[in-house]
Each structure stands twice: as structure tokens, then as C-alpha cells.
Image (cartoon, rainbow, N blue to C red):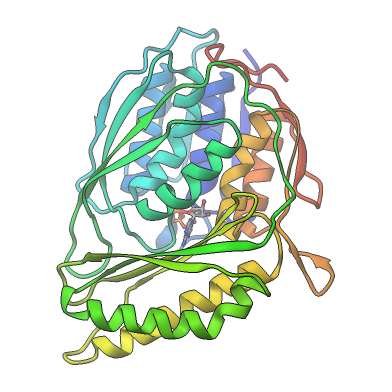
Length: 377
Ligand SMILES: Nc1ncnc2c1ncn2[C@@H]1O[C@H](COP(=O)(O)OP(=O)(O)OP(=O)(O)O)[C@@H](O)[C@H]1O
């Protein structure tokens, strides 16, 4: 058995991502790990929240790992997979939470493991929040993450939304079923270095039904003003998908730019401030203005991914065969620095897999072979 890897939970970003990624890689490579000061840079003392606990319990059970110290608010765990693979049987299941912890962060924790260890397509239903601040929304997963994963050789992923779960307004738990076809062979290395021009923008809007006309009007106005920033000298249309949020305080907007090389860059905002009676109009203006400004900033750097996808691709780069590169763009002639989340993910894969990233977002992956559940570094 390889020696236990100790990960200090206050390193770099010091949040839940470190824990999700570390336990997923431990399950895959059968590397025992110990994580201390879990979420040590978060307020309120850190420790495990429902979403984190649910993720690591799923991984422990699927990989037959011995999990010690795990409970709500735990600040230290050990995760010990069996010394040799026990041919995990990964079947359809329902991962239930009673809080609106992000379903998509649970997906983030378990997806690489299922892709590489399942032997047949798996449907995983997860309950919790589908639209939660500081996490990928189910809309982002559908319109940015999954299409980009298809691009690197992971086809057929889908998300069926049963009901939305929100971290705003009165608490509500929703659910999604993800269909995950396992990979048949090692993921090839991939290069996201050619972005091309933006050819279209999609808007996904969730807002109270009575605001629909106002939202559409505001989107048209701001889109017209931002045309040059979005398309340069080229042409492109705005496609709008509107859904009633059924709550006077629930507003969400995701904008996704698609480029000529089929890259997708997304920016969103879940409005989580108060909405006083008659002030919905101001919220709509603020929402549309902010998200368009953020998207244009992503497009201006000319990289192939948005800030969030960059950290979410690190694990796939590390597990792929040979060289992968993800161009995060340039500002004022300098490479856009990887976010703290991305650098944390890079640190975790360095500690567990020995994969190292260069400043251009490139690495030599370990070529993880599906179905083997141990590292081929
Ligand atoms: N608006 C967004 N769109 C897409 N992805 C996002 C967005 N905001 C955050 N993310 C992603 O969500 C993940 C958040 O990780 P993080 O460790 O902060 O979450 P967490 O488990 O809730 O931790 P903590 O509560 O400790 O902050 C990252 O992978 C990040 O890229």
C-alpha cells in the first residue's frame, strides 16, 4: 500500500474543493490520505458541511475505503481505500441531502471516479441545491461543463432536472438525475488553445414570471450595447431561455458564449440580496448588467475557458494520457494567472498523482486506465 498522503486543509484556497478532489483521487488510485484543518480558511471554524460529507461517504462506500472521523463539522478525516482494487460495483443510486447543499459539487466529487470505475452507464440522482452561490449551477453544468467534457472525449453526459433547489428565498431542496456513461479507454490528452471568435450567446434566465417581458427587454438592450465586446467585427445572435422561478426573491442569469471552435465560456449570477416590493425592476437591471460585463471580461482575455472551468478541468488533465493544455488567456500581454481554486486543484493532483502544471496551464497526465482503479503514473 502506498504511504498515506497528508493534506493540510488550509493550503491555498483552503475550502471544500481540496477535500472533494483528494478523496476522489484517493478512491481512484487507492492512495490513503489524511486531511487536517478541513475547510480551514472558511469562516465559522470550517469543517465538513452536508455536501462535503455526502460526497466523501459516497466515495468511501463505492470504493470500499475505510473512512474515519467524518461527521458534520469534522475538521480531520482519514480515507483509506483497500490495498488492492475490489472491482467496485457502481450502480444507479439516489444521493439524498436534506439541505440545499450544491448537487453539482457532489457531482464534481464523484464524476471522475464513476467515469473511470463504472462498467456500465450509471444514473445518479442527487437532491439538494441546483442553483447555489459559489458553485456551478445545473444550468452551467448542462451548457458549459458537459459540452466541454464532450470535447475532450467524455460523451453522453446528461442532467435531467426534476425540481430546482435554491440557496435564496425560503430554503428549498431540488433534485437532478445525472446519466454518466463510463469511459471505455484512457482519456486522451487535450489542448484547449484555439478559441476562435464568439459566434453566439445563450441566456438562461430564472425570474418571477411577471418580470419576463422586462427581462427580455433588458437583455436585448444590453446585448445591443455589448455587441462589439462579444463578437468583435463578427456577427452573432442572443438566444433566451426563460423559466419562472416561482418566487419574488429568486433571480438567476447564466450567459454562455459559444465560439467558432466550439469552446463555451459562461458567467452567471444568482441574485441573493433582498428584493423589496416593487424593486424587481432594479434587480433585473443589475443582474443583466453585471453578468454581461463579466462575460465580456472573459471574452476579452481570448482564453478558451472561463475562470471556473479552468479549475474544474484540472482533474481531467491530470488523469489524461500525456500532454494537456488549457489556455486561460492574457490580460495586458501577461498570462491570466490561474485562480486560487485552480492552483489548489493543481496542488492536490501534484501531492497525490505527482502531476505538475506549468504556468501556461499545461501538464503531463498519468494516463489513468478505466476499470483499473489504481494509478498508472
Ligand atoms: N459561478 C460559478 N459557475 C461555475 N462554477 C463555479 C461558480 N462558482 C464557483 N464554481 C465552482 O465551484 C467550486 C467551488 O469550490 P469551493 O471549494 O469554493 O466550494 P465549497 O465546497 O462550497 O467550499 P467552501 O464552502 O469551503 O467554499 C469550484 O470548482 C468553482 O470553480
